Amino acid sequence: MQMYDQLYVDFLYYFNHKLDYYECHEVLEELWLEEGRELFYQGLLQVAVGLYHFEHDNRRGAIKMMQSALAKLAEYPDQWMGIDLGQVKQETEDYLQRLQKYDEQPFPFTPFSIRVLDPELQKRVQQRL
Image 1: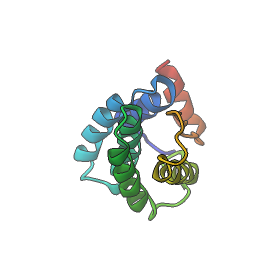
Image 2 (image 1 turned 45 degrees about the vertical axis):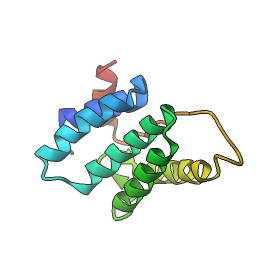
Image 3 (image 1 turned 120 degrees about the vertical axis):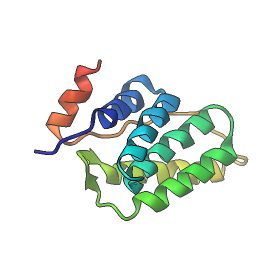
């Protein structure tokens, strides 16, 4: 059975249910520092920061964060740490492409959810609700 740090559970809760990307950054940065700066955590953190930037009209910052996130997450398999990481990478790539064409085709901020695959992890995230 996979053990998940509470900060990781909190990140998924804030990302999927509260849509609070600033708080996502806060909790995952703490875990990232504790865990020896694991690129997986940094990549997820940067996805959240990218969404935060776009939500607050900083498209350049959003593009930069999403490019960096994709580079870090590319090394990981599509199913990792109880989530559908392939879906996260695809959603981030799609968002990035749309942001790069924003001047020609503007679009409103729209969040996306991270699909949780592990039932135990899903249960722990649900317990936060």
